[in-house]
Amino acid sequence: MQRHGKNKAISEFKKHSKVVFVIDFEGTFLASPIYPELIGTNQIDFKDPKGRLLVQEEIKKAMSGGGWLKGRLRKNPETGKYLRRKLYIHPMPGDYLMGSWYYYTPAQEEKCLI
Image (cartoon, rainbow, N blue to C red):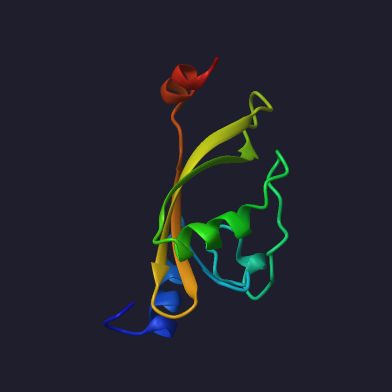
Protein backbone atom coordinates (compact mmCIF):
# COMPACT_ATOMS: atom_id res chain seq x y z
CA MET A 1 0.00 0.00 0.00
CA GLN A 2 2.79 2.39 0.80
CA ARG A 3 4.48 1.79 -2.55
CA HIS A 4 1.44 2.00 -4.87
CA GLY A 5 -1.09 3.90 -2.79
CA LYS A 6 -4.35 2.99 -1.13
CA ASN A 7 -6.62 2.98 -4.21
CA LYS A 8 -4.38 0.73 -6.32
CA ALA A 9 -3.82 -1.66 -3.42
CA ILE A 10 -7.54 -1.90 -2.66
CA SER A 11 -8.24 -2.55 -6.34
CA GLU A 12 -5.72 -5.41 -6.32
CA PHE A 13 -7.21 -6.87 -3.11
CA LYS A 14 -10.64 -6.89 -4.73
CA LYS A 15 -9.31 -8.77 -7.77
CA HIS A 16 -6.92 -11.27 -6.24
CA SER A 17 -7.43 -11.79 -2.53
CA LYS A 18 -10.03 -14.02 -0.98
CA VAL A 19 -9.37 -13.24 2.67
CA VAL A 20 -8.04 -9.67 2.85
CA PHE A 21 -10.46 -6.89 3.70
CA VAL A 22 -10.06 -3.15 4.19
CA ILE A 23 -12.26 -1.01 6.46
CA ASP A 24 -11.97 2.68 7.25
CA PHE A 25 -12.12 3.81 10.88
CA GLU A 26 -15.73 4.93 10.39
CA GLY A 27 -16.70 1.29 9.70
CA THR A 28 -17.10 1.44 5.90
CA PHE A 29 -15.83 -1.53 3.89
CA LEU A 30 -13.43 -0.53 1.11
CA ALA A 31 -12.52 -4.08 0.05
CA SER A 32 -14.24 -7.37 0.86
CA PRO A 33 -13.68 -10.06 -1.79
CA ILE A 34 -15.79 -12.76 -0.14
CA TYR A 35 -18.62 -10.34 0.65
CA PRO A 36 -18.48 -7.79 -2.21
CA GLU A 37 -21.96 -6.58 -1.30
CA LEU A 38 -20.40 -4.97 1.80
CA ILE A 39 -18.12 -2.66 -0.22
CA GLY A 40 -19.19 0.92 0.35
CA THR A 41 -21.50 0.02 3.24
CA ASN A 42 -21.01 1.06 6.83
CA GLN A 43 -20.98 -1.91 9.21
CA ILE A 44 -19.91 -0.13 12.41
CA ASP A 45 -22.79 -1.77 14.34
CA PHE A 46 -22.34 -5.28 12.88
CA LYS A 47 -22.60 -7.98 15.56
CA ASP A 48 -21.21 -11.49 15.46
CA PRO A 49 -23.35 -14.47 16.62
CA LYS A 50 -22.41 -13.75 20.25
CA GLY A 51 -23.43 -10.10 19.98
CA ARG A 52 -19.90 -8.67 19.87
CA LEU A 53 -19.52 -5.49 17.82
CA LEU A 54 -17.01 -7.05 15.46
CA VAL A 55 -16.12 -4.07 13.24
CA GLN A 56 -15.73 -1.84 16.30
CA GLU A 57 -13.37 -4.42 17.84
CA GLU A 58 -11.35 -4.54 14.62
CA ILE A 59 -11.05 -0.74 14.54
CA LYS A 60 -10.05 -0.64 18.21
CA LYS A 61 -7.40 -3.30 17.59
CA ALA A 62 -6.01 -1.35 14.62
CA MET A 63 -5.93 1.91 16.58
CA SER A 64 -3.93 0.18 19.32
CA GLY A 65 -1.27 -1.03 16.87
CA GLY A 66 -2.92 -4.13 15.40
CA GLY A 67 -2.83 -7.78 16.34
CA TRP A 68 -4.93 -10.92 16.60
CA LEU A 69 -8.63 -11.34 17.36
CA LYS A 70 -10.67 -14.53 17.71
CA GLY A 71 -14.29 -15.07 16.88
CA ARG A 72 -16.98 -16.93 15.01
CA LEU A 73 -18.91 -15.78 11.98
CA ARG A 74 -19.90 -18.60 9.60
CA LYS A 75 -21.67 -21.87 10.25
CA ASN A 76 -20.29 -25.23 9.23
CA PRO A 77 -22.89 -26.41 6.68
CA GLU A 78 -22.51 -30.02 7.87
CA THR A 79 -22.78 -29.49 11.63
CA GLY A 80 -24.64 -26.18 11.86
CA LYS A 81 -22.08 -25.02 14.46
CA TYR A 82 -20.27 -21.71 14.13
CA LEU A 83 -16.68 -22.12 13.00
CA ARG A 84 -13.84 -20.63 15.02
CA ARG A 85 -11.65 -18.18 13.19
CA LYS A 86 -8.65 -16.04 13.90
CA LEU A 87 -8.23 -12.56 12.41
CA TYR A 88 -5.13 -10.44 12.08
CA ILE A 89 -5.77 -6.70 12.00
CA HIS A 90 -3.13 -4.29 10.71
CA PRO A 91 -3.39 -0.49 10.90
CA MET A 92 -2.69 1.33 7.64
CA PRO A 93 -1.46 4.89 7.10
CA GLY A 94 -4.50 7.11 7.23
CA ASP A 95 -7.67 6.11 9.01
CA TYR A 96 -8.21 2.54 7.89
CA LEU A 97 -7.19 -1.04 8.57
CA MET A 98 -6.41 -4.16 6.62
CA GLY A 99 -7.38 -7.54 7.97
CA SER A 100 -7.16 -11.19 7.09
CA TRP A 101 -8.40 -14.37 8.71
CA TYR A 102 -8.34 -18.13 8.71
CA TYR A 103 -10.74 -20.72 10.02
CA TYR A 104 -9.52 -23.42 12.36
CA THR A 105 -9.13 -26.86 10.79
CA PRO A 106 -11.37 -29.65 12.16
CA ALA A 107 -8.39 -31.00 14.15
CA GLN A 108 -7.70 -27.56 15.65
CA GLU A 109 -11.40 -27.16 16.38
CA GLU A 110 -11.47 -30.45 18.33
CA LYS A 111 -8.59 -29.26 20.53
CA CYS A 112 -10.56 -26.09 21.34
CA LEU A 113 -13.69 -27.88 22.48
CA ILE A 114 -14.31 -27.88 26.21
